[in-house]
Image (cartoon, rainbow, N blue to C red; front, side):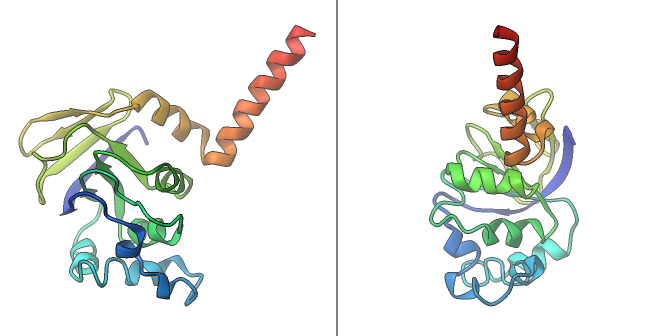
Length: 176
């Protein structure tokens, strides 16, 4: 999972909040992740679901603060279950970033997304720390790529925390 290819299906600006992704009134309607996918962005961008379902390996591109607002995990389900493999943005709130990793939606932070357009084909190479836009040949450095690779290789946040705890326990045991 260190190299992901996808096509930019949607591009958004700054401050896309979780209520735009999946409105609060839908949160109690179901526990099925596919339900949230069916209603993703329905009031903010009614073409989102049909655009995603026309393709596989979709990528969303955004500006700053993608996934702000509440901590609702359903926002990640809504995106991920529309064949979105990654969100490339200039920044993410911590809770959305962690929810994405925990649900195997790749949150990729780059300095500037302004040159990336809908329809561009991207290669996200975590080992090299680069997002390559095959449509423009422009390369974008992934911010915090090494940390992202470590977190993904450990699994979800709970697996990551367990691995860190085991390492600390081994370190402490070796000091005794």
